[in-house]
Image (cartoon, rainbow, N blue to C red; front, top):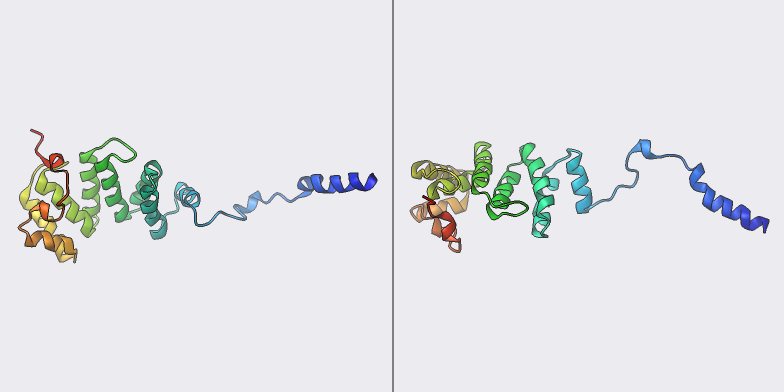
Length: 179
């Protein structure tokens, strides 16, 4: 019986004698998971791979988490995150639909020099969607995106800047003037 109590004391008492490793941080961190990525984002650690994970998060339907990730990445200057925030706002994913906010994200990406941001803002301006209609400014941004090598921008140029060329299945009612 003494052996039983000795063994029980050693097994159940061991945690009390164990060294506190918390001062070393995560000694066995979770890897390759959405939880790990979101903890990194909350700690302010963004990178190309962390920000790209937002694509998989939003495609899995976790739009609130994707918004948190993309917002943090956008704050750190990752332009791809800005264009994803535009997509989330335009489609009301993780929040209410807001075309003005979507166009603002496009503007931020365009101003940062991102060809996709230029293209998207150019389309916004051509349609007057989320921003005021400005055909000349829209075409100029499409032209910049084409010079930057964006093939879809070249396609739009070839089609006389007709948005239906690059968004044939768009819900056209969204892009009609409201007033």
